[in-house]
Image 1 (spheres, helix red, strand yellow):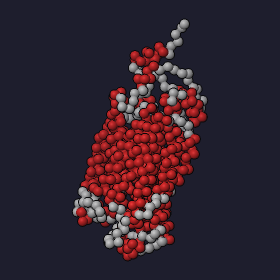
Image 2 (cartoon, helix red, strand yellow; image 1 turned 90 degrees about the vertical axis):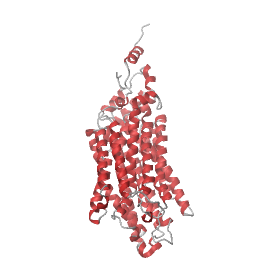
Image 3 (cartoon, one colour; image 1 turned 120 degrees about the horizontal axis):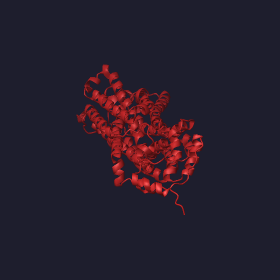
Image 4 (spheres, rainbow, N blue to C red; image 1 turned 120 degrees about the vertical axis):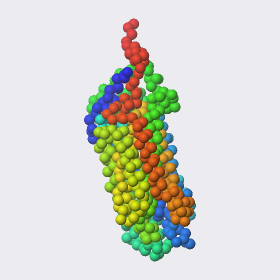
Length: 535
């Protein structure tokens, strides 16, 4: 049996879409713009870092990061993100969403700037400093996941809630696109000023000393959008669901939302709910396992599987494009030209598939539903990954490269118009308010565990089977074709586990979490306790 919801929560569920909803999307979304920019811009500069700091004067190839260093540079931010998602997710339920929200943004701003100022008297010193600040950058980014999703879900009405949460997440696409565009502009400007021949002609001289500024500027730019939105984050009121359901202050929640929604919401008189303890079970309780155990398993496992494929494909697409010959060999370019070419390729993919995929999800998520989009996305990713992998030798021929790039772009389109969006949305809708941020953080951290598998594993797995043909310093791998087959199998597994994901389209948060459900015996005690006993 369901009990009546608080008036302020009902008002939020049926509220018309207003200007404030769009303001909240931008304020929360700029955090995700920064998240994506910071996480993915590293893939644009790793080749440059290798040329600057790890050139072998006795070698015949441009300098490259050793395997362990490359893995650390690419993956250390994910380790920080994993930690931040767990910590700030828990803290958001304990202290409130708003109180923690500004902290994560300031950590991102400070560490973005500090990453670009990485110092050291030796290559090891510079890379160690860079990794230190990128870990803490990831820690701040991690907090943004559960807090932004929870805040947006608790502000939105139930009719368009999915689109609002997805729109916040879709700002990632613009962050990825901005990273590529900034890298193109900076590298083009420096190359115009310091134009030198390719490595094949000039050797070490193909890397001018001024190239050291290029990667630093690209990294530091990520602080700008986050800094610009800090003030507005601090002006946002606490969500009504936290204030009313966790802080137990329905009067304040009604006052806050009256200002936000510009409607008159009357505060309700205090009601005695003796069944409250029955619905205050903890995360590690049997009651939580009975009600939400399968849901948490589904959100964690699908996000884990998705991020193995998504991040390995995103971070190392430059290696994939080089393998099929779409990006020229490093010897044929100078250091700054290589940044430009890599950024141009990744920007093209982002513009044609990544960004459209995010916004297709925004427009259709409240029409098609979360489950349908996630199942379809995983299934299409599986099909396209196998289509790339099985005839891999066919795609390496020069005449077929454009076809490969188009198929590869479609995997990004359906990851974003699919599980990359829904794995973010669903955990913010199906868990109780007092555990919502924590459970979203756990789900997101599972995803980042998958990202670490992708970041650390793909580098080694995709190497040639013949060690003599592998990149310098790497052991023999299983080859690009077999690596793509494994990613296809991972997507297929995600398709099947998606069957466990509940559909939350058109339902209130309390309906999905079961917070308003009481059995008949408890309902009778509730009615008796609220009844006036004559003296």
